[in-house]
Length: 215
Image (cartoon, rainbow, N blue to C red):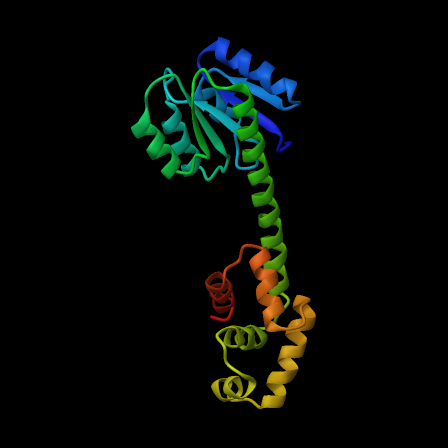
C-alpha cells in the first residue's frame, strides 16, 4: 500500500468529503471511514499512510482508536482534528505519539503541509526499519566468537585486553577482527558504529543484540 495514502476517519460525511477533495487537489490518495470501528476492520500492521482522525465520534473515539492501534502495534502518523476545545485531550494525544492536533475548520494549506510532513517522517522511519533489518542480517553472518570479540571491541577494549578476557592469542583476535569487518562490510569499529547509527541501532541495542546471540 502506498505511503502517500491518507485515511480520513470522521463521522461527519461533510468533513470527510471536503477533506478528500482538498487532499485530492494535492494528489494524495484518500480512503474515508465513518467510524473508528470501520477503519479497524481494514487496518493491519502492514498499512502505511497518514491518519486524519476526528476526536469525538459515535462509538469509539479518536483517542480510543489511537490506543487500539498502539495495542495492535500498528504505527501510523496521526493528525487529530477537533471541533471542540480539547486541550487536555490534545496533550494526551501528543504524549501518546500523535504528530499533530488541529482545530476545525482546519486551514487547508496548513493541513496539506502537516500531512506531507507526516508522510515524509513515516517514509524515513520505514527506510530506517529496512536498514535495521539489513544490519541485523549482517550480524547473523558472524560466529559466536566473532560476536564476542565485536561486543568487547565496542566496549572499548583493545586486542590485548580482549585476548586476555577470552583467553586466546592477540593474533587470533586480529584474525577475528579482519573476518568481522569483511562479513559485516565495514573497515573499522568506528565505521561499524556509524552504519549501525544510520540504521537507528544505538550502541546499547547493538551490544544487547550481540550478547543475546552469544548466550
